[in-house]
Image 1: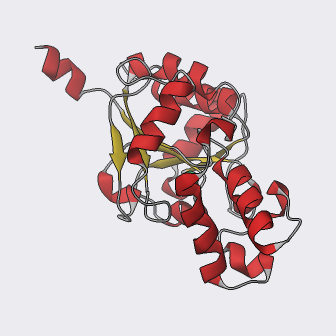
Image 2: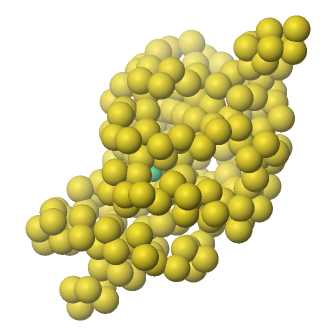
Length: 214
Ligand SMILES: [Mg+2]
């Protein structure tokens, strides 16, 4: 009986890097130390960082690899991510989906970092899943919370695009308090990308879309 009820819950996939944690703060530090540059977080205005850093793709990938040994306690959490996950998890099926391709063998580090920030399996999320390079939209969730601008290209599932300097150019709907307008937007399949500037807005969207998922 319990299983049947759970089956009706909306499935939500929340990203780790760039949504729960500001991992690129660490990447920038590593990159600057490695190559003597003076780049800032807000300079990452493209998903293809090597194009704006004016360097080779391999140099960015090499900096990513160094994050394996980085002290993740120093990586800032997006403000209140833990608080709002705790509010959302009981109302839906919430998994954390992360692609570890560029920072390999770090799923355990991800889990430890989540714990460190008070994001606990069972009370804040259900499963932690490494997508291993597979398109997240292929996992069949109803709602995605992600910073990846590439995910806006597919119409599968609704995307709450977590606002970051590297996804500003994605065409998306800005946060709006008016529930009716949001309902009208959702009725149009081409309007399934909603930009959230912070976790408070993610939560507001969540409540409006699904009425609490129950
Ligand atoms: Mg991300």
